[in-house]
Image 1: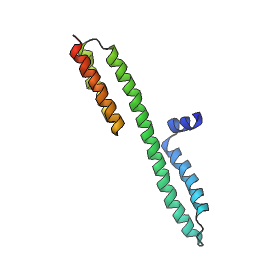
Image 2 (image 1 turned 90 degrees about the vertical axis):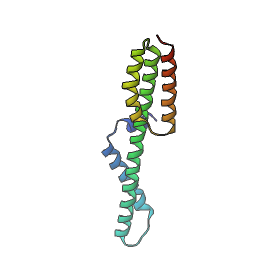
Image 3 (image 1 turned 180 degrees about the vertical axis):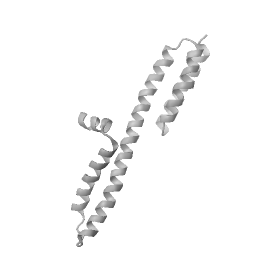
Image 4 (image 1 turned 135 degrees about the vertical axis):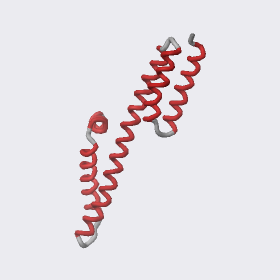
Length: 127
């Protein structure tokens, strides 16, 4: 499992695309049993290019999501450690922009709303 996580986190996209394209190309080449070999090659090429692209996009979204959750934890720690309204304003102006840029989907939106609620509540009670 650690090898898979290491592969997903550290491998460049072009290498992921190449590996997934080759793997899916071999699978599709063996799967289809068309008589003319050129039809088998064309079908395999089209399917493996689409599947390789899909794998690359999935890994990209996983990396972005991981960065989002790391930044979310960092912002929550900054909010908890903030003691003045100026610090809270800086957190809202600087860190939340990066968080909004990385967010995609309902879970990320819910986390942004939760952090903003904590920030607003703390802002009301800090002098």
